[in-house]
Each structure stands twice: as structure tokens, then as C-alpha cells.
Image (cartoon, rainbow, N blue to C red; front, top):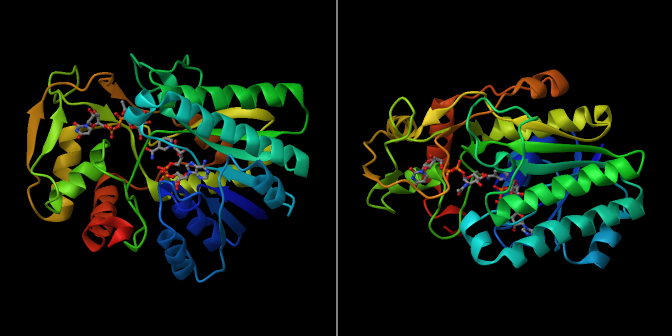
Length: 336
Ligand code: NAD
Ligand code: UD1
């Protein structure tokens, strides 16, 4: 199977390219490098020992997309997009154009080239404010910020397309909280600027880039009072894409599937596990709640098990050990 991967040099894209190559797929990747480094692609080639063609290309370049898609692909895995929630509040139009219009361009090029198998990176953010977990795919959707709005809009675009035209097979994969890195420590998450997400901030604190982790709230109705999330190892997440690819023809039109572990960990549990992995006590301070945060959210992963035959295998200890190995070996990410 010949697969096109958009956002190939990014955090989840590079890990998925590696797993695809290891499994024997032929992979072509592209990215505009707005939030990633081509060094990740070089490392994926080294780790897999396989060729990986990579192009610098933007989703907004319609002619470029048409040219590339015409080469002929069996399926497209679409990771490319902007993902910073705070930035999306400041620049909603940039997010709409890049994520929604960019995906419309990709779909138009796929149509033109006769490729109708698509796997899209959606997010649990489409569930909006969640009152009760686990959350299954039938939970009502809403956008709590412009980034979330782009995920809803792309999901809706895919649902409408599949209703209007026969022959599409579209998997909308709703990721929970991806963390960790490849066990080699050679590829991993390299956030630009100060990370908003918990795990990269915790790991950067462990290497001395921040004085302490700020714990956003300890008065939630959770066992230790801190926020609970469904963390998923990025290797498990990448393997979820392979499972979806292998079952893509079972997707009749567009269907959404949660990719999560089905259990939650609190902020304090994450800091404790990361401290164990790093072999040092990672300092933290309790701060007020972050506006817009839910107390707790974790996935009902039953559909992924049933439809894809996939479930996570790596727990919090492995997520922290692997993330730490990457962070310690690459304290400044790919820029080092
Ligand atoms: P990432 O930023 O590391 O990867 C996304 C890649 O897309 C980057 O390499 C970026 O340069 C590229 N890109 C952005 N706009 C582009 C454009 N117009 N043309 C070409 N390339 C473009 O992020 P990631 O964590 O690997 O996320 C991958 C996908 O998964 C995103 O769509 C994201 O919204 C989604 N997602 C991520 C998370 C998470 O926590 N990491 C959670 C849920 C969903
Ligand atoms: C965030 C995004 C969400 C995105 C998801 C995965 C927001 C509001 N939501 O969700 O859209 O899909 O990432 O990328 O940004 N925490 C701290 N201190 C920190 C950072 C986080 O205590 O420095 C806490 C949070 O309050 C939360 C947990 O850690 O309880 C996880 O936070 P984070 O990694 O930002 O993920 P989400 O809030 O789930």
C-alpha cells in the first residue's frame, strides 16, 4: 500500500511514518515545516533503514497538492494542521484557513486523483465541556475554542462529503492526550516556545528549563483535586493509525473513533511518574485553575477495540520513561 502522510515531520506524523515503514508500507510525506524540523525525517529514515520521500509543501498550495496526489496513493493520513489553542483564540482566521481550507484543498486533490481513503487527526476537544467520563463517540460535539472549531468543521466536511458521494472511506480519529516518544529517544515532541501541555512542561522542568511545574487547580472533584486526562503513548497512537489503515475499507463513509487508553491520570500522578522516570523530584506549585479546563475526561475505547482491533498497550510509566529518554538526549529538541 502506498500512503501519503501530511504533517509528516511533526510529532505524531513522524512517529506514524516510522511505524508505517517498519510495517512495510511505502510512504511519501510532506509538511510546510511551520511547526517541525526536517531532522525528524532524517531520523525516521535512520531508524527504519527504509527510504522515505519527503517534500516541503503547504496545504494551501493547490497546484502542488494536485501534482503530488496525481502520482497515485492508496490512502492519505492527514496530520498537517496548527494545534495551539491559545494562538487559535488570537488568530481564528489563520486557523480556519490553514486547517479547514487546507483540508478542503487536500480533499479536492484526492477527489481529482481518485483517492478516496482518508484518515484524519481529530481530537477529543470536539466533545467540548464533558460532564461525565468515559466519553464515547455519540457524546454531543461542541467547540470550546477556534482550534476545536476547526476539528468540528473538518469532521462535518467529511460527514457531508461521504453523504453526498459514494465510495469514500474516512476514519476520523479522535485522539485523547498524546505523550511519550519513540523508545530509541531519537524522535519525539519538540514544541516551539513554552509548552502549554502538561508532559512537555514537566519534562522541560526536569532538565532545568523551568523552575517548577504550575499545577492548574487542586480543587477539582477528582481523587487528588487535580485535573484528570487520558494520556496515550505516541507509539500506541501511531499504531492506531496502522490499525485504521488496515481496516479503512470497513469505514462506510465517514466514521469517528476514539483513540485513548480508557483511563485517566491526575496532574500529580503524572508529575510523580515523571519524577520516577527522571530519577529526581520535579518541583511543582499549586496555582489557580486554568480557564476552560474540564475536571476530568477519559475515553471509552470500546469502538476502537471492536472496529480496529486496537487498544493501547503502554502505561504511564512507559510514557514517562520514553518521553524522558527523548528529552534528556535532546534537551533543546531537534534544534540541538
Ligand atoms: P505537530 O505540530 O507536531 O504536527 C503538525 C504538522 O503539520 C507540523 O509539522 C506542521 O509544520 C505541519 N503543518 C501545519 N500547517 C501546515 C500546512 N498548511 N501545510 C503543511 N504542513 C502544515 O502536531 P502533532 O501533535 O503531531 O499533531 C498532529 C495532528 O494531530 C494535528 O492535526 C493536531 O491538531 C492533531 N491532534 C494533536 C493532539 C496533540 O496533543 N498533539 C491532540 C489531538 C489532535
Ligand atoms: C489541551 C487542549 C486541547 C488539546 C489537548 C491535547 C486546552 C484548553 N486544551 O487539553 O484542546 O486537544 O491539549 O493536545 O489547551 N496542566 C497543568 N499545568 C500545566 C499544563 C497542564 O496543571 O503546565 C494540567 C491541565 O490543567 C490539565 C492537564 O494538566 O488538567 C492536561 O493539560 P494539557 O496537557 O494542556 O491537555 P488538555 O487540557 O487535556
